[in-house]
Structure formats: C-alpha cells, structure tokens
Length: 397
Image 1 (cartoon, rainbow, N blue to C red):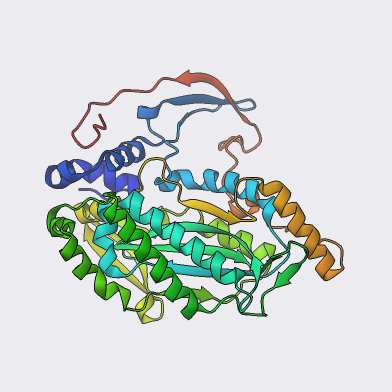
Image 2 (cartoon, one colour; image 1 turned 90 degrees about the vertical axis):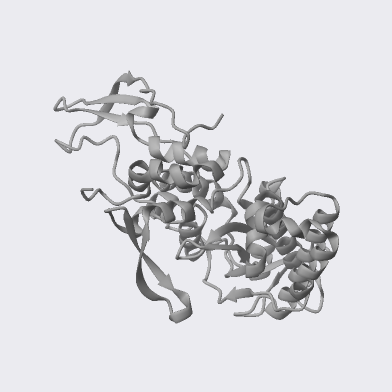
C-alpha cells in the first residue's frame, strides 16, 4: 500500500475493515462510535459548507468535524474553549501536580468495568487529597483542585492514572484566611499512598458486594466471593504509586500545563511517523530509561486495538473539579479565595497571565484566504453529508 499522510484517521480508514475481521465482534458500541466519528471527521460523510474568498474569488469546501473527544483532530478547539472558561479560576500561587496510579493487576478489571473502576479512582483520589489536606498535622485547610483521567502509557498500553493539579494552599477550616503550603512541598506522598489504597479497595469491595462489577473471560472466576477475596488480598499490602511533582509556578505555568494535559487523547497525530504496508510507526518515551526517545512499530490492527483500549464510556466525565474549584457555585468560591489571597499577601492582585488560551493553541486563521492571504472566506453554500455504506465496524445500532 502506498504511504499515506500519518495520522490516526489514516490508520482507521485504511485498516479499520481488517481490524473488524479479527476484533470487530468484541468492539463495544462506544468503541464503534469512536471509529465511525474519527473515520468520518472532516470528510464528505459529515457534510460541511462551501467557502468563497471575498477578494480573489477562491472557493473551497470545509467539511465538518466530528467533535468526538477521542479524535486527535478535534482537540485543539475543545481545549481552547475549556481553557478560556478556566482562566478566571487561576490563582496567583504555586501549583502542584499529584499523580495517582492504579496497580497493574487492576488493569484487566478496569477494562471490563470502566465506568465503575474509573469512577472509584476519581472518588478515592479526591477524598484522599481533601482528607489529608484538612488534617491539622499537614495543611489544615480546604483545598481545590482538578483531576484529569489518562488511561494510557506512551506505548499505548493500558495504564490508568489520574493527574491532579492543585493550588499550593487552601482556605483555613474556619474560612477566615488562606494557608500556604510549605515552599516546594504539598503533602507527604507516603501518607497519600496508604490512604488512597485503603479508600480505593474499600469502594471496590463495596461495588463487588452490590453487584456493580462484571467479570468476563479470564476474570469470570472472580465472581466467586472467596476467589475475589484471595485475588484482592495482595493488593492490600503492596505499595501504591502516588507521585507529587515539584511545583511548576503560578498562573502562567499552570495554563501551559493544562493546555498540554486536559484534552489529550491516547496518541496525537504528531507522534505518528509512518502508516504503510500494514504497519504503524510512532514515537514514544521510555520513562523507565530516563525518558529515552524511542520508535515503536506495530501492526495496524494491533495499533487500533491499543487505541480503542482508551475509549471512555459515553458521557463519562474525565475532567472533574473539587473543593473550592467544584462546578457548583465555583465563581463565588473562587472570588472569596482571591480575596483571602490578597489579604495574605497585602498586595494588589497580579495582572492576568499573558498566555491566553488562544496563544497556547495556535492554529491557522480559518477565515483568511489561503490563496491571496488578504481576503476572508465567506460561507456561500451548505454541503450535504454523503451517506456511506454501513459496515459491521461502524454499526452502532
């Protein structure tokens, strides 16, 4: 097969049918929907509109985007909109990055119970951070933070973990003043790790007892309570990984960070080097070897299989806000926090960060004519969607 322009969509369009022959029956409705959307993204299948330059008369067709959150092509615009909404929430403090990772033995269970297990991951991590932060022996304050779920490693294997971005401090328990973290230190990771493990396993046990977990294939034997208990026991004594990175500064730095992390998909188009002869080659970092830059080549079918591991259930919220950054009444709470910070520093508020979402998500001016570079493109007609023939891979009924 001739070499195609690298990209996830190119892989799916070229080898989706091959994947369907070997794995199509095991693909979930959510996974089929993702495949259908990405394959059709910015093609005649979704329709679009005709644009004409108001200066030189150049005409072109712009096809609609699928807007699926797993589509690499659609994340820049979604990220810019989200960052614009978050800019008001930024505080003039150092921010910390805390990562909660599920142990490897829980991976297969999570894949069969994504909504339940990922939900428990959010709940256990959030309660751990809030409980330890409220303890007077540590911070003694109510904190706010956001958590972003990633389920992949650089090699596209299943690796569920939660990135938490936390302002370096919180509101005193009496609500009267702001308490800063110790410089360069947020909360002790060994304490976070033990509590996270306890909370997660407690909620997981409750889900098992309430019949909220499913067991299929090689995990079918775990449906037996005694087998379940034996399987769970080693997880109660092993160390769970909680990692707190050094603080990365104030509003400017955190906005840059959020621009990179919040709307990531399992692999970006920029990491794909080639798609040809039934194989996909992409870049990845080997963190076990000091972030060594490597190349990996997979069969296109295996690439698609790994990509689909990271499809989330429909309507599952993968970016969540907690504490004084929680969605409910966030505007008022953040306003109060900023007032307390001003009182604590006895200085005027810092100017807004110069790194606006638009600057962090540069892209071509879609209104500028690509031919004359002076005129603007104006929509002159609608292009109807062109129906495609249904295949077992794309059928979501």
